[in-house]
Length: 461
Ligand code: HEM
Image 1: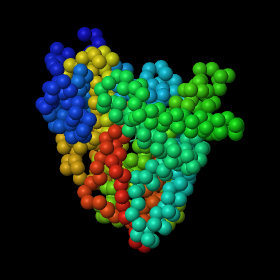
Image 2: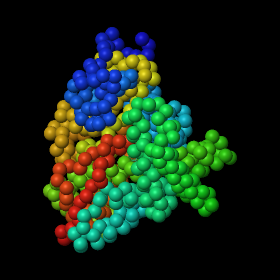
Image 3: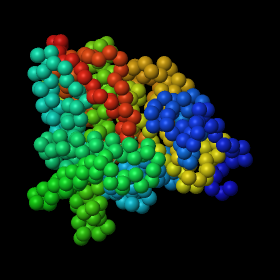
Image 4: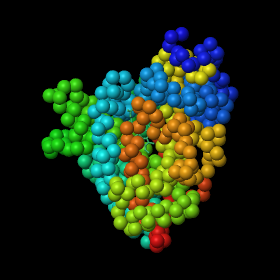
């Protein structure tokens, strides 16, 4: 039993309880495909570690913070990203930082890490704010006419522009429609393939698959163009692309091949904008329902900024805005599920984990656990106030934890806070449709039909 940590009571390990409701050959598969958020919440309420069955695949839904710590931090090497979802995502993104494992992952992480140091991100703040300001101008204009806008579409466009300008110094505004559409098609198909249960489904010459491969070609073309433009330009660029290309120099040894470079650019483009766009969208949805929070934000923005543009230096003072972002990432985490696979047998608490088991760690389910969060569905940014105890590191993990924690976490927090501080003083956002927007828990948690909000001029401060 040397594979078990000595602190684990191995002799008492038993199989996790199976969640009731597994039907026929598929088990819980159809519910996982139709309403995974409800299924994972039910699994959380059933037991801290609950067994699910998806056809022949056995999975454990893990919502116990100590077990989450073991999977993500203390025994992370036992739990690689070798799951079917990551293999399928590779069809779209290739082998980038998000999907790689082992030494390949470590090499890539070391190359990219310097681009995400605090001091470097601070330099990018002005570009984030300038891009948000342009959207603020457009919204202010629409507000004078009382228009309704799909803020999800606008924020997607904004986040893509910010990712292009800050990570690659590339202007993607002309390409935004093509990239946005190709990514949307690509992600929808990846999601369908993950849920189809058939190993080779992507290779059948069906119309949907052909559309998928066309989207992949578009994404490759755009990333190749970004790289070619940089090569033609030459010179030193202190952005992520410059760092990755410097490392790709054959003289440098051990760098990235052209193909690896392309995979990394595409990965960063997707990981760097899809999540932030959805995080901003859910935040605006929550704010449209909570005018008293908006009023407190307005007071903070007036006191800190007094009508001028935000800078990186303002970030620390925008405390309440940061609390709002944290609370929004708690209630609506853009990455709603984190998957791992047990490379060896293990024990989590007193539960036996057979080799090959799929592990499902859901920020959505854990962030709404009534045992960890009082009144969990209430939007209350004061939970993150300085006078409150910090939530446990494994009760709150919108960016994951451990060595595979999001590399862009600081970048994302800076972007979300500064974009909100730029947009909110410009307009008032009011709900149009009754009830909460339908949610699509796909690769990220996105609104199914966008988010329509009515714009009107912001009240004078
Ligand atoms: C609100 C915004 C964001 C959220 C909620 C988020 C969340 C996450 C989570 C949960 C993971 C871990 C996934 C897993 O292990 O299965 C992750 C990984 C990653 N994220 Fe983010 N992310 C955000 C923004 C960003 C941004 C802005 C970038 C890049 C600029 C980025 C780049 C990455 C990369 C490259 C990884 C893989 C890291 C590795 O495995 O070494 N993310 N993100």
